[in-house]
Amino acid sequence: MRRAKADSITTSSERAIELARRFTAANGDVIAFVQGLTDDAWGAHCVREGRSVGQVIEHIAAGHLVIGGIVEAMAFGSPLPVAARRTQATGARYNARQAARFAHRSRKDGLRSLRRNGGIVRRFLTSLTDEQLDRTIDTSDGPITARDEIEDGLVGHALRHLEAVQETVAR
Image 1: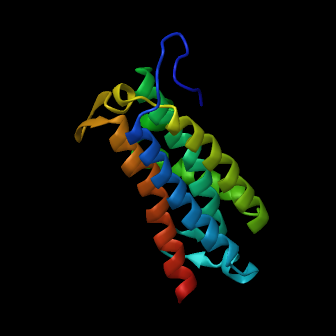
Image 2: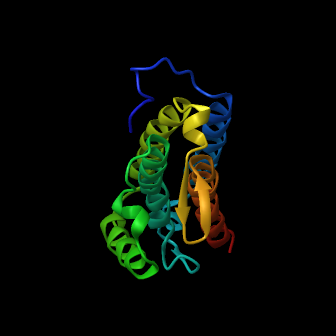
């Protein structure tokens, strides 16, 4: 992820800093959850997700960069990455391949991914301007802004998946 363009004088938006804070808090909630897991809980099957708790956690961490890349393209007015153009079927195939890739990763690996990817995205978010946050793209559901994608895509993605794995561990 890149920072705001240096060729013009830009200052980070207070809104961007607040969105970065919310993203960091959501990622922190996931990290705290993972820190409290046992090995058995890490490997438990999450019925809602159709994969293990650990695979879902790694999916969250990977999603930080994937969704962050979508936000980046929106903010800079660039073409959206392929990940943003997936259909439900291609997304399901991607998630299945991703789950297989993450099948043997440890809690320590998951924590490292969450911290690393979360830090990259947080730094990027804090560099955004109000103009970048307000850039809009048209979708099949109507226009959305980069701010919308941060709130629902980045923050919402992490929290929705966290809820699913918390439900699994609570059983």
